[in-house]
Length: 314
Length: 268
Ligand SMILES: Nc1ncnc2c1ncn2[C@@H]1O[C@H](COP(=O)(O)OP(=O)(O)O)[C@@H](O)[C@H]1O
Ligand SMILES: [Mg+2]
Image (cartoon, each protein chain N blue to C red):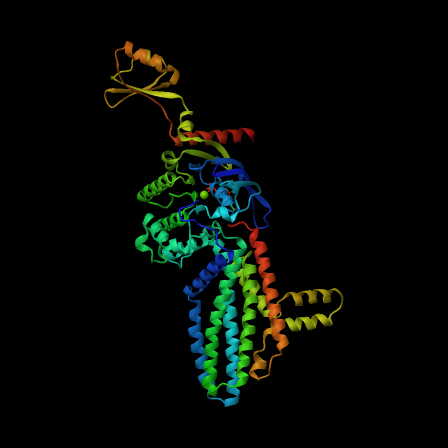
């Protein structure tokens, strides 16, 4: 059973004073996240990531479409006891202390009274806020609020966790901790669905990613697959100070680096010819590696493609 | 399914958790500290009028005291009520509440109960102030003084209506507009009887419109028994019954409106 099934969710906002103007934030979205996956929802600012999460949380209502979470209708309160949500730039009742807030949320989520206070202490430790648990939230910095946000999202030990830009507002140390936490959740068999516009966050963490731009899904897949399909090129490095003509003839993009090394990029199908040429020239081969573009390059490529198709249809 | 068997709570306990958090917010907002100011004010006034003749001063203390209880409460009800929903939408504190197993109507009812509870506690302490002032000027209580409880009960009924109205406006408009709407209805409501009388004298379409308006606004004139109580005139049992039903019905209608609007509203 998939953890999350988004079945054509679509959102058009009415804007302006008379609510007459229409703003399409999300085109019908079809997406399935498997149980136990860490799923990255990527897109630049304004892509529709937050809108998607708000639809899933029942905070805004879809223009059309539905979703299922853990196999049940997504609006079912029983489902909501099994999910955790970290909003973008979260804000909480600032007259409460971190401890009080988590205790209150534990009550609302139905964490039994007996386990509640122990569990609250536990998550406070986990997000590194135990020392300030008695401080009112109005005195918290943005990074600390982000940690409170993470704490309340995992407090009731949910099966599926939705995180909207979980790394934002955190210092490098904090980002690292969030990454570790997500790995731990995965290890516990939880499903994690998180949005980000920072691709390197997704690259190391995700089983799969989806890319969304201007409210439309542009691609879904395993990170390695997405990035390796882009170019199909290999990088060949050998020892030497010159570029033999026979190698150059293969159309390789060569340059000399580090004094005695030559680095060349060739198409994958030229790889064998390249090696033969080097052998004939008695060059000492150091390495051959497939060129994997970063997710970033893939992303830019996808978006550029989207822009140009959009432009050509105008 | 989970480590510690999270269960969806019965809705009653979710509502009471939301209500007590609302109460906690009011307390921490230092709203209830108005009480101290109120008590001081009242004692000051009591000592002042203590200089005037004994009969008049009792009348003044009851009149002044109960009017103040009512006005203070109305101000607090409006002041807190208008922000109950809109502030939570504005600050986005609702996101992490409504993504839990909390239905939107439960949230509204919880907020209403919390505010109503705050006002009852508030009224309780202010009432103590009134009785102390009374004791100061007349040195003893007489049987007629128990009528004050009826006036206080009506004041609380009035608060219920105002809380519900503030919540209704708060569910679709800004705090400022909600305050204006609620306060206007409070003022107009105090002249509801005059409005009804006026409507009865009109003809044709004006009559229909005026009658509609007169019966739509909350009829607060029926709840104001302060003057007659100060003159030790008894209150008809009939009025207590009708006022109770009227207030509950009116608050229920306003709350239903708030729920209907809020249930379909996109959060910012
Ligand atoms: N309440 C709203 N009213 C009107 N437009 C909105 C609203 N919320 C978001 N949008 C628009 O929808 C688009 C997607 O926004 P959002 O989902 O917040 O993107 P992301 O989270 O990917 O940055 C944006 O163009 C944004 O301006
Ligand atoms: Mg966003």
